Image 1 (cartoon, rainbow over the protein chains, first blue to last red):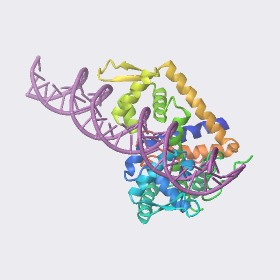
Image 2: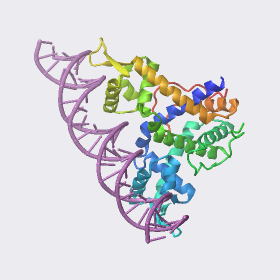
Image 3: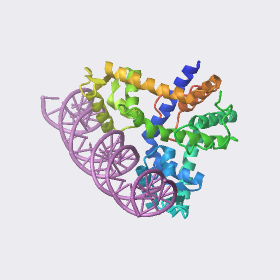
Amino acid sequence: MGAADAVETIQREMTSFARRARASAGRLHPELSLVSYTLLGHLEESGGCRATDLAAHYALDKSTVSRQVTALERAGLIGRRQDPEDHRVQVLHLTDAGRRILAQVTESRRAAFHERLAGWPVRDLERFAAYLVRYNARPGHAPDGDRPTSGGPPGAGSR
Amino acid sequence: MGAADAVETIQREMTSFARRARASAGRLHPELSLVSYTLLGHLEESGGCRATDLAAHYALDKSTVSRQVTALERAGLIGRRQDPEDHRVQVLHLTDAGRRILAQVTESRRAAFHERLAGWPVRDLERFAAYLVRYNARPGHAPDGDRPTSGGPPGAGSR
DNA sequence: CACCTCAAGTTGTATTATGCAACTGAGCTA
DNA sequence: TAGCTCAGTTGCATAATACAACTTGAGGTG
């Protein structure tokens, strides 16, 4: 297959995934929407950040994030602390309850992924993971940039 | 990295992709939402089907599909024909305009993917594409949702 | 045929996520 | 101090969606 075909395939498969994800994301975890889940996940990874960071990182409007954050706070999953450095800023952080719920949903999602990926050779899993990281780590939009998470992309994209 | 870590990464990155796709699908093609796009795509692939089929295939409520179909018809992108066998049934089909728009959006998406994947060695593109196909072909419960629609598991051959 | 049941679609209603724009309040700069 | 920028909130509108009730047609069964 040529490069063009490969790109075509990647497009189709990623789109397919997105479509299915969207169609039933809410059904599996009614208590935590896909967006809420990723926001909580981000807070856990980053150890706390500003609402604006979340908005920039996920290409969401700040008003959307503001409302999500309000909801998550009302649900007791996150808390806000005023930044002593800059009183405009609220540093968001997970509460214990938030950490608990997040772990719970993560585990359930992880189990599903494990089931789906069962039988893959470890080498392929690692390569696949690296490709996804590389794909998602796009230059440009979020100055916040996707952190390289785990293992670096093999033969990182430069040419 | 280890298999568990790799699975974890795949989970996170696929989720990340789904989230971004959802967030920006509407921005890129205001004229055709992600759902509309996939519905049109389905009609093109299948060469025409019923609204109920679409609903079942994408795990959408029939009312949702009904409204989407109504909108697409009003936009002149699809048409309906009454099934002579069963007058309850409307067989949906793409119009020429629908085919045109679909091709247009597909092309623009393809271009975006190309841009994003620019600089990847061809070998990596091909491997990535193969992994995605393999992932999506997997039956059973999907982490982000999927229903047993169709298509069996083509051997997990690593090409 | 009359009647019952089921399937395909439509429509009413409510909910949710979202964006844009206007606003508030805090910090920064000339 | 005046003016600008940035973080966050809120008002308003829109779109997608689900659920439930309804309409119409098909298929049986008496």
